Length: 131
Image 1 (spheres, rainbow, N blue to C red):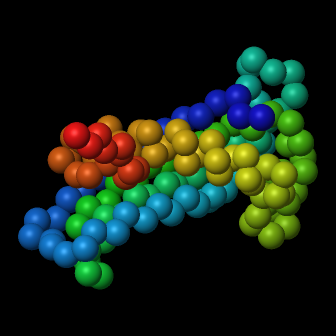
Image 2 (cartoon, rainbow, N blue to C red):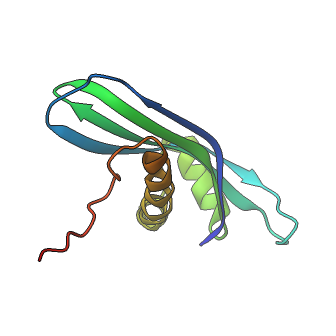
Image 3 (cartoon, one colour):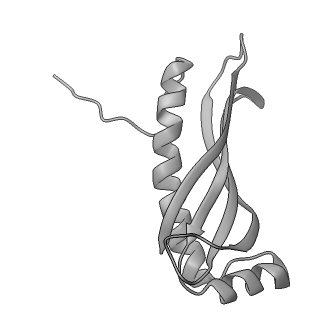
């Protein structure tokens, strides 16, 4: 289970004069995993480093990009998670799916605020009210 979620770096850029059909793509990536000691727990946790990129592409050109990097602290199965990463740079599927779901939920929410600051479309569909 996630016991800590940290964004440690944020980069955002917007290009001028990029036109065409806009595609918004997300790229989550696990970059590293290590064991970490946290004062709140007696046993070590898995510290999972990630990057999450939102690309705004139009006709093959990048119109804007938002990149968030940081780490997630995961309590439970620490040895299994670290060993799986050391063996083949993958997380166990029982951890990967819930982790990715939480990453999407939290990081897309963060990206919405950044997109608003840059006057970009939010990276999620917004409801439309019709008369």
